[in-house]
Image: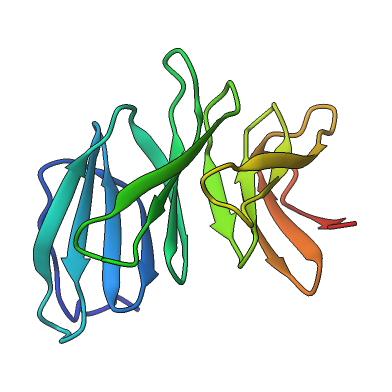
Length: 170
């Protein structure tokens, strides 16, 4: 069946990823732009801010008061963390260099998971988002990790050619 859109939000360029937190939609566009959209009164969507980033965003993840932006590698690729306590004015609070493209990022209260293609999947300690730390890295021969979500300590990893792989967080 063909879906009927409830609403649309035109953008200046292609959208790479989206994340929501507290009635706000964060939109990563091709280029170096992150748009901030109020979605409290759907179907109305209103752009209420934007940020020009240093590197191109590939992926987004949000949890309560932290927004993670997975970046494309030009010289460095990594995860940039923003405080979204003031949703219309995200403030950068931390960054970790992972040395490659971050294709997918997922957040929980104190952990971020970043999918790095053929460079694996990593978990990051973000209990202090100002100083994110590498906790663990998973790599598998001939497996490219594209994204991951976690539930009940099981990591559901989306891969390029191997379908979904389940991994233990331990």
